[in-house]
Image (cartoon, rainbow over all chains, first blue to last red; front, top):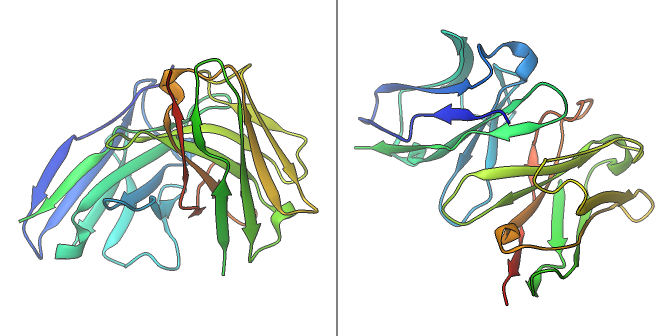
Length: 110
Length: 121
């Protein structure tokens, strides 16, 4: 069973930059894992931000970008806004037919 | 506008069954992979199952394999999840989600608002 690991929590100042990462227990994350990123605020369903590593949805602000970094999937937030305070989840397609979410990163903007 | 509306949740005893429904609108339903995802409040989401556009290909998380069945009715634009032999650990909010247009079952683009399933004696 693949385990996907994210930083439990990160803190960033308004206007700053922060990188969230997503690692797989099976090894280096590649484009073949189709990394997705989601934002979730309390009481709401998750909202899709990034798909297939580095593609933004039409509603995703340009300050969010996806990439591969050091064998992990990464979500970079540049010029962080107060409204970016939320939980962020990554999703990887593991070998075979399973899709696995990470445990989430709670981002605090302070 | 894409809309996904889940229903069918509720309280059930361990060992019982429920069928969830998700009515879709605003897009060509039969052309899209669809998913079920669940989330315990305060925890991360967990993928449950997916089905391709014509219903011929399905996959399940190991934790529900053999107990849950995903299906779809492309005439009614409705996705289903039949849940049998329910356990306490199946308690969660269940979301349906739509894949990318032209996607291959690896993405969740649009999500419904969820329906709560509680398994307890």
